[in-house]
Amino acid sequence: MNEHEAFMDEPAIESLVRKVRGVTGVRVVKNSQGEIDEIHVVASPGRSAKQMVRDIESMLYVRSGIRLDHRKISLVQIEETALQPALVRVQLVRAVFVESASPQARVTLLFAGKQIEGEASSEGALGASPLWLVGAATARALDQLVGARGQLQLENIAFQELGAIQLCLAHLTLNTNDGLDVLLGVSVVRGDQADAVARSVLDAANRRLQRILSMASGGGA
Image 1 (cartoon, helix red, strand yellow):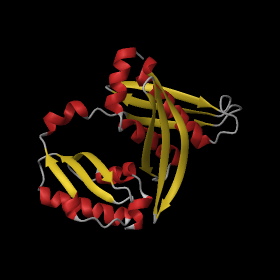
Image 2 (cartoon, helix red, strand yellow):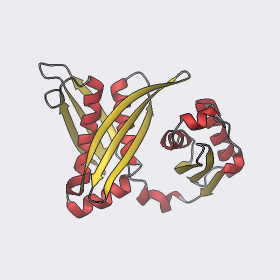
Image 3 (cartoon, helix red, strand yellow):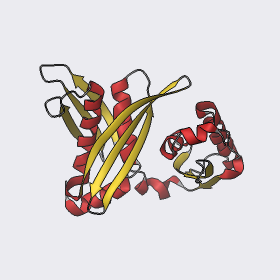
């Protein structure tokens, strides 16, 4: 088994595949040994399917060291107009940490043309690091979308070296009447760690955005 396959979880692998031009959706399935069984990919029809599969193989090998047989990649191409309703995502506008007597973080998100803000301060989280506060502020902004049907909570933020790449990993939970849902997200650190933290939290939530929105529509924000 390729050791990188077991090291990287499904969300991290899916995040890499999404970077391939034309990919609009991806789902990774692993077996009980942690090996990749299948990668199901939805893509726009503007590029050759064979070339996209090759690009996915190259992306996984170059960025994570995973060597994957192309036969494990299942790719379907669908017109973008048919996919647009399901590709609603929250975007990061800014993530700011403010040093003061009571340090706090403010995060602004954009969803459906509307800005949403979240804040977190050290008063409510004694001993919390600045980066933790950024993650908590992002989660609180997203929690406004969930509304009364549940609560989105930041559980952990961690940084991981992957060769020359530094990754930020976010672990969130979504607590609803149906139980506890685990959300995992990843982002590449490109200089600004606060920005990477906010994007990793967004990555976690965006994976379940349609479900979150369907719950929020029933309970209000």
